Length: 228
Image (cartoon, rainbow, N blue to C red):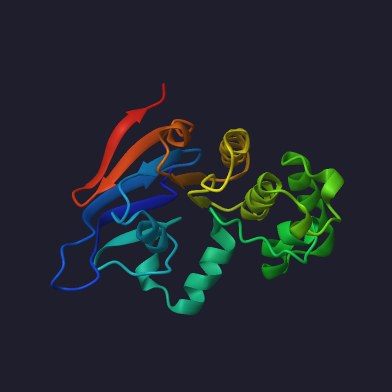
């Protein structure tokens, strides 16, 4: 069995000493190819959990490892470099840059990693094809629909082949058809190109596209079911 890409050990988080913990004693391992959905009521800390996994926030207790690197041991610069190299983010609000072309938006992570121009072009073309946007490569992102913008966001999150993909309510602003297409694309691309993925969602239909469903509450991450 391969070593876990992501490992949480007794993770706890609270925002003030006089308030109950958002959650405590979270434990989780994700290995190559695993894609899990995390559900839970509003305010339970799902987005906070993503911030902890990405090293954007620090737990009150417990530890997070990404590819064997403990995040709490990193200073801000090292954590930024690890995120840039090893994590891909997909957000509900897309966060595409409207006055850049589709290709330029997708290539941004490769620019930040100083990937060579030939390799940058090759990977960008591969992702354009994967998300079905070859014909729109030169168009400005502001000209595209919400569903197309979300496909750009997925391509951008995966173009640098991250070890971990974090998707925070990626279909919340989409209609049912585009939501289904986005979820299918996200799953297939995580399986094909990334190490592992976590989908944060309120939607059981969205969660059902993952391999496992976990529910986050103050007591931990509780399994709902696994796919055969």
